[in-house]
Amino acid sequence: MREYEPIRIRPLTLRGVFGITWKVFSRRFGALLGYHALYLLVAFLIVGIALLPILQPLLSLDAAVWSSIESSGANAFRIVGGLLMALLLLTLSFLLLSLLIVPIYSGTMFGEMSARIYGSASSVGLMLRRSKFSLKRFFTTALCNMLAALGISLVVRLVTSVFTSFITISAVFNAVPYLLEEGADGFFNAGAGLVIPFILLFIVMVAVQLAGSAFLLFVYPVAVNEPVKNFAAIKRSFTLVGKRYGRAFGCTLIVAGITLLPTLLAVAGFALSVALGGAAGVVLGVLSALLYLAIIILLTPYEMALATVLYFDSRTRLEGTAWLGEPKEQPAQPETQQQPAPQEFPAPEPAQPEEPRFPEEDRPEA
Image (cartoon, rainbow, N blue to C red; front, top):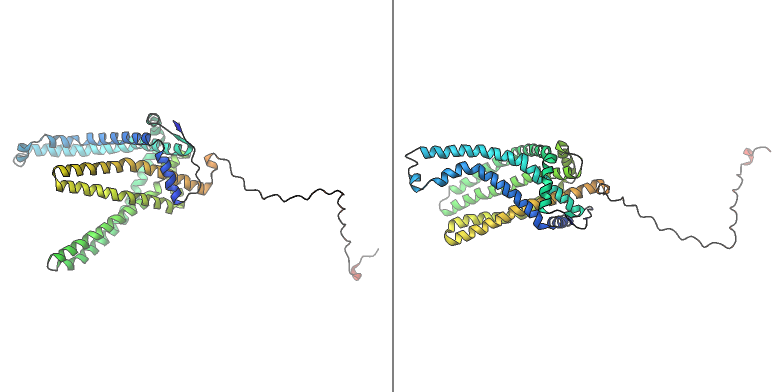
C-alpha cells in the first residue's frame, strides 16, 4: 500500500471532474493496469477455450480437405458440430464471466478507486488478495446490475427500432430518384444518401445507449461506499444520477466521443491492411491491433475512475461532506465590533421610563 495525500472532493466544475479523474487514474498507474491486464487475460482465455471446438477443426483442414468438403459431408459435419459446441461453451463462458469474474473485478477496481480518493493506492498483489472477498460482497449486486442493464437494453432497443425504421424508409425514398439518374453521379449520390443517414443512426443509437446506461453509473460506487447492495444499490444509483443527470451523461458522452476517433482509426487500419497485403499490410495491421489494444486496456479503468469521481461529486453536492469523515465546516463568525475603552468614571444610571400620560378625562382618580 502506498499512501498519498487525500483528495478533497467539493462540488466540482467539469474541468475539476476530469482533473481529479486523471489524478485517481494515474496514482500507481502500473499496478492498476497490471490488475486490469490480468482480468483481460483471464477473459480472453475463457473465450478462447470456448472457441476451441470450432477453431480446431478449421485449423486442421489442409487445402486438399477444403477442396473435398463439397464432395464429402464428414468434414462439414465436424465443422457444424464444433460450431454448436462452441455456441454452448460461449454461453457457459458468458455466465462464468458475468457471475464470477465481473463481480470480482468490478468490486475490487471500484474499491481501489474509492481508496485512491481517500489517499491510498494498492499493489497488484494486494488487489488480488482483496479479490477473494469481492465475490461474496458483490455477487448479488452484480446479478441485479446485469438484470437492470438487460431491462434498460430492451427499452433502448425499443426506442432505437423506431428511429431505425424511420431513417431506413426515409433513406430509401431519398435514394430512389438518384438511382433513376443515368451515369455514375446518380449512383454516387444514391450511395451517399444511404450511407449518411445510417451513420447518423449509429450515432443516435450510441447516444441513446449511453443515456440509458448512465443511470447505472453509480451502482458499484454506492455498493462500495454505502451499506446498501442488490436492488437497493440500483435504486440509489438511479436517485443520485437522476439529480445530476446532465453531468453524468455529459461526461460519459465526452469520453465516448474522444475514444470514438482512435477506434475508427484502428478499424480503418485493419481494413486497409487487408487491402494492402504484403509487409506494409502486416505492419499496418500490427499497429492497428496495438492501438485497439491500448484503447481496451486504458478505457475501462478510466471510466471506473470517472464514475467514482462523479459519485463523490454528486453526493457531496446533495449531502455535504460529513459522510467523508470530515468535520462540519463552522459558518464564519462576523467580526466582533471594537469594544469602547473603559471609562474612568462609572457610567450614569439609565434614565427611568417616563410615567405614562393619560388624557384628562381618562386620568384615574387619586
